[in-house]
Amino acid sequence: MIISILNCDKKYGIGKRNGLLFSLPLDMKFFRETTQGHTVCMGENTLLSFPGSKPLKNRTNIVLSQDPTHNYEGVINVHSFEDFLRAMKEREISDTVFVIGGASIYRQTLPYVDQVLLTKVNADGGAEVFFVNLDENPDFECIDEGTPVMDGDLEIRFTTYKNKNKKEII
Image (cartoon, rainbow, N blue to C red; front, side):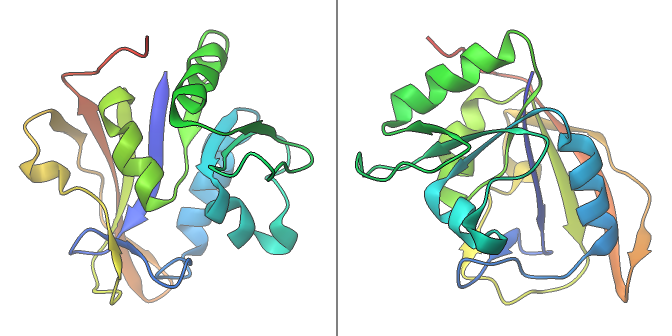
């Protein structure tokens, strides 16, 4: 199974200045527990945004860099979107694969995911980068709206969307 996992503000904003919009301890805990022991797939900028630009521990990290001279330690390095998809498909045979960003990676992989685990934040984060509004996308159906909970001083909701029209990776 291939799953995109992310949070967004009420305008489907997901980031600014190559960073997250909010500090959400509950959402971070959910992300950590959900992806632990699995494969995470990301673009180069997402890897570089991590502390020390180090891959996430206890996970297989697949990183797409368009620059063939950029190879990072402790990750599976790929240098084309086609190779990125192939690496995801290979891992999907024996593992759950999570797409973890950034915006371009989310957008390009969206047709190929089975589900989107989307934490909705009831606030405007002043985003510069946005995710697709899944509520207006005919290929996606919200199968779990979640219950509103407080994460610090922000109301969040853990939602799950199913891709009704998943495109197979060839």
